[in-house]
Image (cartoon, rainbow, N blue to C red; front, side):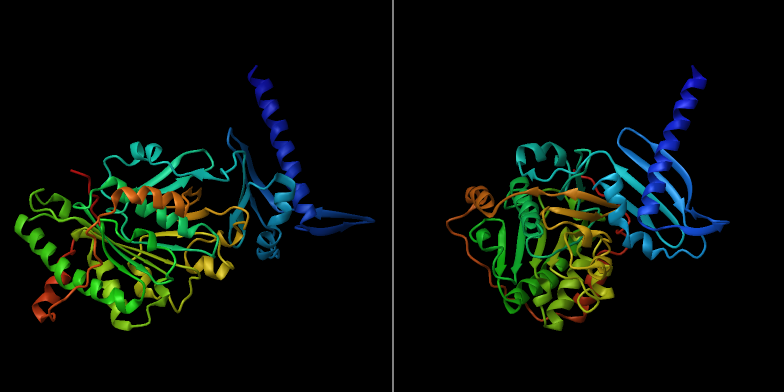
Amino acid sequence: MRNMRKIAQWFGRQRLNAQLKKAFHSAELYISYKSGDRVIPIYPRIHSAVETDDKIEFVFTLLNGMDPKEVTKKEYVFKQVFGRNTEIKGDLKKFVLTVHKNELPKKVKYRYSEIHPLINGLLLPVVCGKDRHGKWHVYDAVNNPNCLLFGQPGSGKSSMLHNILVTLIQYYSADELHLYLGDLKMSEFGIYEGVAHVKSLAFLSNELAPALEHIKKKELKKRGELLKKHRVRHISKVPKSERPPFIVVCVDEFVMIKDEEIMTNLLQIASLGRACGIFVILSMQRPSHTILSTDVRAVLSVRMGFRTVDLRNAMMGETPGSEKISVDTPGRFLLRLDDLVELQAPYISEDEAEKILAKYKSSDWKNNSFEVKPETDNDESQSEEITLGVLGDEIERA
């Protein structure tokens, strides 16, 4: 019986190897060796071919002299042989070819009733989407602060922003969560006007500036003093009677910020905010070296790469492969958290978001204009002390 199983496994590997060699031949990934009148193709070396319930995985190495760029250039050939759910990863010589048996869902409907059990107990939950196995991926922004979303128009980036904000509004009361929104494209956040959680809604960068000044000079200082007073490392550990609300600063098309001082304040908030319960979400269409400077990238721990124009944009956003996402699958993106994983984001239309938000609107809402006193040298030094020593700690909801 055992021998029969081994024979079956051997035949299975031979079948898989034959398929891979067929792909190599179609992609012209071989070196021709002439023996008399015969021309023999020498293919890349196949090290393993393993089939499981959910995937087939090949490991192969190129022969010396083969151009590794040809592998990625001919990825379409491997998809023609093995199917659309095929991906190749590798570099100079060694490559891993994975053929997934399960497809990603083409659409995931946003339902808070389905999401809530997944996020219950998290401090600042972000629901990302479902993977090809139907598993939800969520994370706590307290432990993974500050997120960048990017992608072409129509890629699903805007729906993801609504998903994040609408979920947080339903999760926390207006006394527990404050939102500062920058709609610099002037087309995304108008539906949040009147929502009690929203303390500032700006459509121009100079309208956003006073809100950022307020957070930097007042909120960071006040919260830093609470951390010192109670000798705790995160604002969630402050007694409830004194605990301030979480703050989320969300700026759509932050590339429209041309003022250096405004950008500096935004980055300082992102850099120092975690211990104080202040977090930043930024979105843009095309990542580039000009916009995503080293300082910007340093404060972002999470990236969501929707469909990008090309590999350069995808690499700049640290989500290689997002340039391959089809225009026919809006909401498909690559999440860079601990690893890189492909997900389908939950879809919520603007009309659906507006219906949910109607329950949270206040009749006496007003868009705050903030007056901030000039910063002293002492305030500046205190801000820099706030988050020292806390970035490696995971925080749990009390």
